Image (cartoon, rainbow, N blue to C red):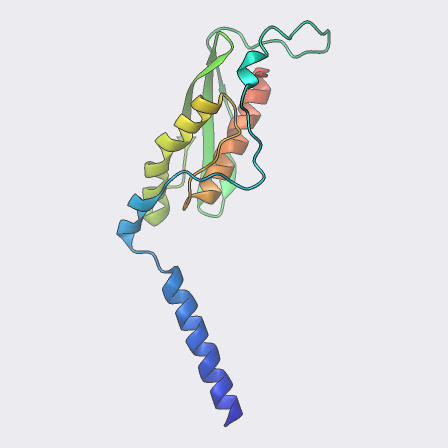
Length: 155
């Protein structure tokens, strides 16, 4: 009898966990930006212009430089971004690749503009990401940071 009770309790717990984690197709509209724990603030970072007087500083990117980041694989599909830098400012971030198909594709389409907006506001790859799209957000930031590094962007 105790074995049956433990089995029933285990199956009930499993069913409850699965039920609580179930998301309906309409749940994508509840996605919202969230701050990740451990992310550093960039407040005041724009006031450090003209600090390229040291000899080992990376040169500023050329006017109108557009650089593709690497493709970063996630469990839901590849993510790759392209960044445009003009006059020492990030002026555009475009997703070249995002997960497609099914729920992952739906989420990617919804968060693409949010991630781009966060990058433009931060003027870096230090973005908060979007709740419900953690893997895509992390891969987006990694691809963007690599593109910024390749462009020699110091923000």
